[in-house]
Image (cartoon, rainbow, N blue to C red):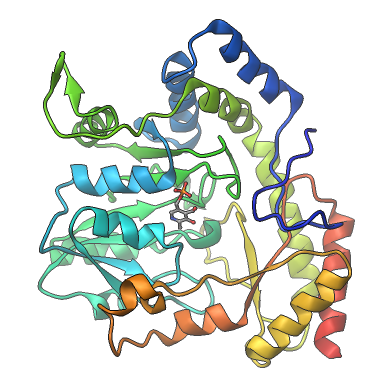
Amino acid sequence: MVEVRAPDGGPALKVPVARVDLEDADLRRVEEVFRSGWIMQGPKVEAFEKAVADFCGAPHAVAVTSGTTALHLMLHAAGIGPGDEVIVPSFSWIATANCVAYCGAKPAFCDVDLQTYNMTPALATAAMGPRTKAILVVHQFGMPCDLDGFARLARERGVALFEDAACAIGSEYGEARIGAFKASRAACLSFHPRKVVTTGEGGMLLTADADLAGKVRRLRNHGQEGGHFVNIGYNYRMTDLQAALGIGQVARLPVTLSKRRAIAEVYRKELGSARGIALPAEPSGCRSNVQSFMIRFPEGGRVVRDRVASALFSQGIATRPGIAPMHLEPCYAGTCTGLRLPNSERLAEDGLVLPLYASMEPSQAAEVARAIASACRD
Ligand SMILES: Cc1ncc(COP(=O)(O)O)c(C=O)c1O
C-alpha cells in the first residue's frame, strides 16, 4: 500500500477524512508508460475506458481531464445553450452548476431531500419552468437518485435527463451499476483523489448514445475528425500516465467497495440509535459506493456539529462539514435573489462528513463513532 493522502485528507492526523487507494502495482503501470515514451492520450486511455465501461455496464466511455470537463462536454454535445435552463441540486459541488454556465445556459437550483441528500422528482418539478431543457441529477456522495422517477418526469415534460455521477462509480441502482441506466442521456464520473477511483485528476462520460459519445470524443480533441477541425473543440484529453494509474483500481473495485461498505456498516451499527444523530438513508433497491458518509445533527445543528468536529480533531480524527449550497455562493447569489432552499441550507449547517477509506480498519471506525457519541453527550 502506498501511503498517499487525498488533498483534503487534512493534516497528518491519526485518522484522515480520506486516503487514496494506491498500490505499488499501480506505480509500476505508470512506470511502464513513462518508459514507453508515449505519455499522452493513447492505448492506456483506451484500455481504461474499456475497463470502466465494462465495470459500469455502459456501452460507450470517453475519458477526459476531469469530472467537470466531462459534464461540460456532455451538456455542450447535447445542445444545451443560451436561453436554456438546467435543473441542478443546490447541495452539490460547484462544478455541477458551472458546467451549465459554461454552455451559456442557466442553472436552476433545486432543493434536496434531508434523508438521501439528493434531489427528488417532486422537488425538481417545483424548480421547472418554460425554459427548462434538462435535469442534471447528482448521486450525492455516491447515493443513487430516483432514476426511474426522474426518467418519468423528464419524459412527461419533454426534457433531457443527465447524471452527474462524479461520486458514484460502483453505486448500484436496481440490478445495474450507475452509468448503465438507459433513460438518461449520459452519466459523468470524476477521478479526483477524493473519489473512489482516482487518476490524480480525470473524468469520464458513460453513455448508450453512440452519437453523443462520438461528439464528445471529437470535442475533447479540438473538434478534430478526418484531418479537419469540424467543431470548435477543447483540449480535454486524459494522459496515458493518468489512465495507467486508474486501471488497477478499477480491477480492484469489487474489493474496494466491499471494504468501504463495511466501514459504513460500522458507523450505522454504532451510531444508528444515538440520540440527536441522523444517518443517510439508502433507498431500497439502491446501494451506495459510500464515496462519503455524511451524518447530521438535526437537533443541535451547527453548534453541536462544530463541537463534535473539534472534539474529534483534538483526538487526531479529521472530518469535514457538509457542502455549501450553490445558490448562496457569490458567483450565483446575484441570480438567485430571494431563493430559499431550506433543506440544502440545513445540510450545510448540520452535516458532518466522517473519515472513510478502503484501508481504514473497522476498529478505527468504531473508535470514531464512540468519539462522536461521547462529544454529542457533552
Ligand atoms: C457532484 C460533483 N460533480 C462534479 C465534480 C467535479 O469533478 P472534478 O473535480 O473531477 O472536476 C465533483 C467533484 O469534484 C462532484 O463532487
